[in-house]
Length: 126
Image 1 (cartoon, rainbow, N blue to C red):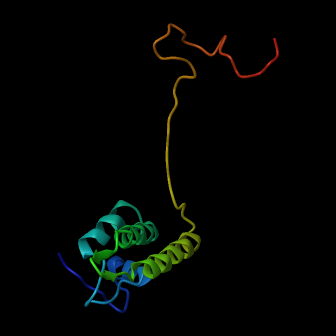
Image 2: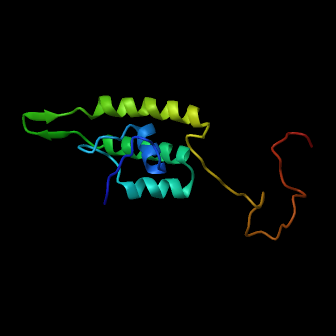
């Protein structure tokens, strides 16, 4: 796996890294291949959103604790990335979550009914 960042923002990977703030070679969250996957699956904007969500998921892991010693600096970082996510969703004009559902029949599939005639619509009129 690789890491690269071009300060001139000449590649989509570098552009996504810039928006996410993942530009430190000494401590980066995402591999180039992961970023490139998200860019290929959508756009730079959708890749930025997906990458921030991924980073938040990594920062949401339980903190390290061993007997008397506890290490926790993830909560502040996670909150910062959650704020960044809200900013980038607004900046790119993309939905935060997407879901799709298709309902093809308003009646039971195992009945012999093949139209909406006689289907109860919830009204109290007789």
